[in-house]
Amino acid sequence: IAQLVDLFEIIDINGNNIMSWGEFTAFLVDQGMSEDVPRGFNIIRFGDSAVVDETMHQSHCEKAIYLKHYDKIAYVEQGSRSLKLCSPDLVPYFELKDFAQMPLYAAYIENESFLVVSCSDLTLSFYDVNNGLKLVRRILSQTAQLV
Image 1 (cartoon, helix red, strand yellow):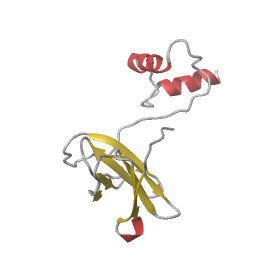
Image 2: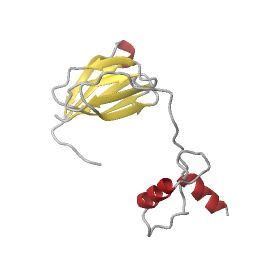
Image 3: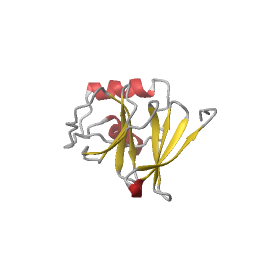
Image 4: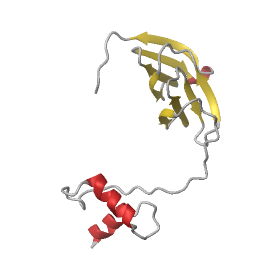
């Protein structure tokens, strides 16, 4: 019975304690009919958010990354050569514009207080968070490795 309760909580995405046909079929499509469904799932609940993005974007956001220890969201708009930062409440914070190519990913290095951004031209750019996001170093790699 415990597995059935867990399975119900997984399928009931919005947490209203009612399993709709849409939730059920979406679950089956996502998991596949042949998989052993009750085995080892994590429960994720989705609900309405009070946070609304009212920013005027030049295009759709192609990538968004939450930088947990920096408590900022980094995002890239389609076709843009800049990385924009905002608070978790979607209040604009800063825009990094000095990239030759499109930013691909951003990460925060907590022990150094650096924001590092990788771009499609194989560069890594390091910005000092404690110094107004000043560019500290830019490294050009000769090759890329997919992990």
